[in-house]
Image 1 (tube, rainbow, N blue to C red):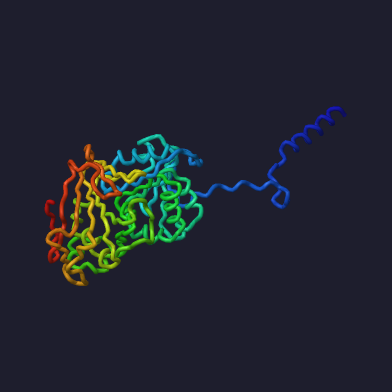
Image 2 (tube, one colour; image 1 turned 90 degrees about the vertical axis):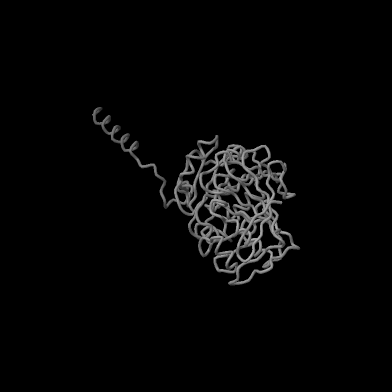
Length: 351
């Protein structure tokens, strides 16, 4: 009898221990399972993406494409306070994650591949961007960035980082092409200087203005990249001619060679890092293009002085430019030029 009692107790104990403790889903008082955090658009993470609060400094990086400039990304990391890094792109891989993580101490690096307007309007995607302490926009095709991101929650999140949270934000190649208030959208493909000079109103010369990113110190600017490597001086001059004629604005341009970056701090002082040159050029409202019409070769001569230009080499003691005055911080080492166009032929002369 005693053995039977022990056996019954053991069976009851086994049943009790084996009971499924999963809450009854039909019980209204049962605890709700915790939702899994959404990582929509994420294609790779290194580190801990827990939101952190760091002391950040605003800053803008305009990188000219080609091999990335380590010094520029280190500059951004230092200004991020070591927080969360987010890389945006519409094609490609998460290769930036390991590269950036190796350059300095950061909480995490995550790449978001945002290749549709649906993803660009996803609140979860925008949330990840808003939590960043450093944002970098990879190269690719700026037509994708304009087409997918303009007017979406992603655009609003980037502008929040730029103007409210004030963190370092930068881009290379196509990622730099969208940083100006005026921008070449590349909707109809790449544009050679020869095409723009021969027909400044070709559909390929499609420019946008005042409807995308609101980048400090770049609200009167258009940017260009891969500059002398792809002979883009002519097309950038045409861009400023179009902006002047179409919108009545004497705009400014910042063009950056490959393996070179312009890093603008919170006070508007730009430092040129890397191995090549950056170019800063501006129009004069009193010097309008002489011939700028559809299917006609451009003439913007003004006695050979259509645009005032500064060329500054990277990595020297004078490699700084004041974005407020739009003049070199130190004139020694900065090369002054005039740019002009006559009958579709771009030229440069010393000032």
